[in-house]
Image (cartoon, rainbow, N blue to C red; front, side, top):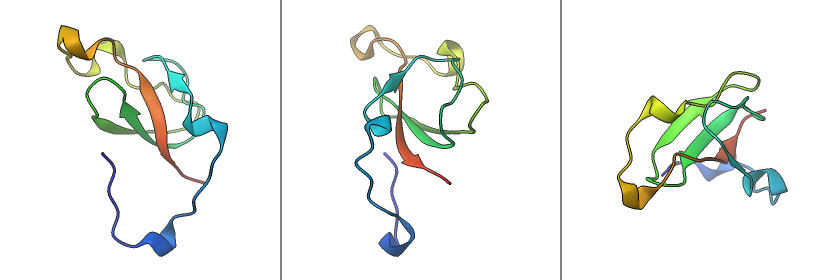
Length: 75
């Protein structure tokens, strides 16, 4: 889970981009922090580069496949 101390440096945004789930290894749509939907692990990815691949980290069968969701976007 992403954490922060100073909320004055963040802006709340209800954009649908935060609702989309992305497959591993696909191009990163927005630079920022992405959360794995299966295990909660966070990683940083830059726009245009690939999201971490399927073999980035291991999941149990209960966690399912690795899937990435944007949690903090940078501009």
